[in-house]
Image 1 (cartoon, one colour):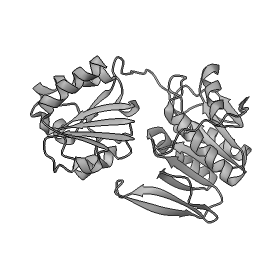
Image 2: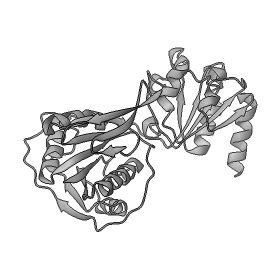
Image 3: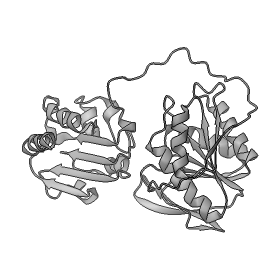
Image 4: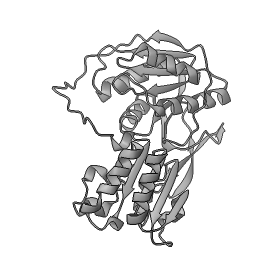
Length: 317
């Protein structure tokens, strides 16, 4: 028996979410009294693999043969083979586009029960019961898994990163897989702009900005902080901002370390997309705005006065 954690890399680099997954998997493995293994597919620098050892894997399995594009069937086959070889009774993914694409396929291959968007370690292991957010993050549900093997996807920013150094031997994983069925002819990547879904800091604004001509102060604050910019749905619907910046239940679901909401009332649909943020700061002139109920810190004031002063103070700091 073992716990297997699948780690996605971005151009050969691991991000914070990988360390969160390892910390989460390590805690479960300790509770179960079994080893934890990590799996990385695709070309990754040796120095990057070394960083994983800080978070407790007893082995780090790697294979970069043909994993240069995300062919879901090929990746799912590889992860399933690794789980079977190491007798993994629990496989952990990240709750994101890649994790969602792979977790279901792996669950079918392993005949495993799947619980997505979990937010804590299991409440009990026999029977296996775990907590997750349901109804667009409005409430928590307790899910019981009856299968011998389980698949979990962990919501971002829901588990503390804990250093737990281990030997972490890097080992090439032999796989039996066919050539990928998907052929990538070309790849176009956004450059020079921080992607919203990857951002640790996000500056977001809503209808309180009164129009697209006033967005300069939002972009300036984001530049000062090294943050990505976002907006509420009405702003993208009105054409003030691109739809790629719309966060909320019907837009992008994000989980940054810091989310600054400026002139956003805080409709439940918007809160559903940002509720996993580690810290939420709200700036709104309406003291009764619902956003303050979700915020960790709030400033009641006119954004057109607060933001320039806040930006200047940050620059001076």
